[in-house]
Image (cartoon, rainbow, N blue to C red):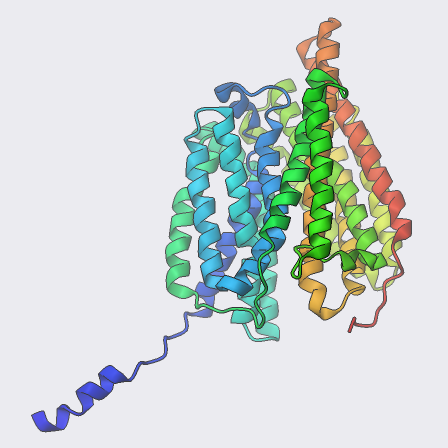
Length: 484
């Protein structure tokens, strides 16, 4: 018997069995958990901002960088993160992005000064930029085309919407029951578990044609926009002509000009400039940039208003955002159904007009406002309109490009919206801080000064949104035929 077994032993050692594929549910769980963390951290800090300001000593305009630090890094490196998966592998990129995000969450939760928190948030944004585009590409390569993939993507989309919806409530619960630090620290155990699961369950895969990473392009666009945002923020204290403000503003414009030159000359640009010769892409990105400047700021200023003026607890403020979330989901779901019968540009224009009306209504906040009087109605109107606006604009942009550029244009639309939101928040926060200081020095009560400042921010946001709505006329009529 011994002689019969010996040949089989070496054969077993020399023959390597293929690695068993992980169950589909395990892959979906790991990928959706990563997506949930990315989307959650876009909004989870809003409700915690007043507590962060008190604990770390932020100024009136300084606290905006807790939001903008994440948004700028996320937007600036998003396209780079998508391409990294092709070059280094989707699993490796997923693990790298999630590891960076988790480590930055720990650093942010332990921060002892404003600059430490802002730096951690920026690194979180970088990790999210690497992680987010990889989640969808893992799904599309792990599930065969057809109903199974459709269900997986539907789950991924729902989880993303759930993360945005849960942000305010989760932030309020953690801040009220534990501490603002747990808004960030909660990511650590969740991120660690997902890292272990992803390492065990995901299999490595790469794109058919890996392209060189345009790191200089990502650094230039992020640095240029950050410099512009910093310069705008400094105008509140030093004015537009001061070297402290003018230097970053001119420097940011110069860096963005250099970015354009680099993209025109490099073989594998982060953003191929040829895409902006396509009318649908150029006009849609312009609309989303200006619309993002308004919609991105609504929850930011409402969080401050509810807690600093109306003295809501963090939990109550988080719960107050739930109608907003339901409204934007309804608008986003309603738009595709209407697009089968009505011109997408008409739907987008109506959505923009509804959102403008909501933000103008929101600007009429007062120191003695109520939830029913100044929060519920304007919030529902604004977010319903935003849902009706964003979906048709994105659909028109995607209908104008070939299949090979679909992923790149999708990432570009998200980038434009995020960058517009970051710059818009800077403009609005600077204007609000100036109005607050002016009203306070004029003898207004603290609550009224804050209300007037936030009201001005909403009015400027409505102007941005109105411009974006007017620009919808530049959008071409969507072509029902598939792009080549």
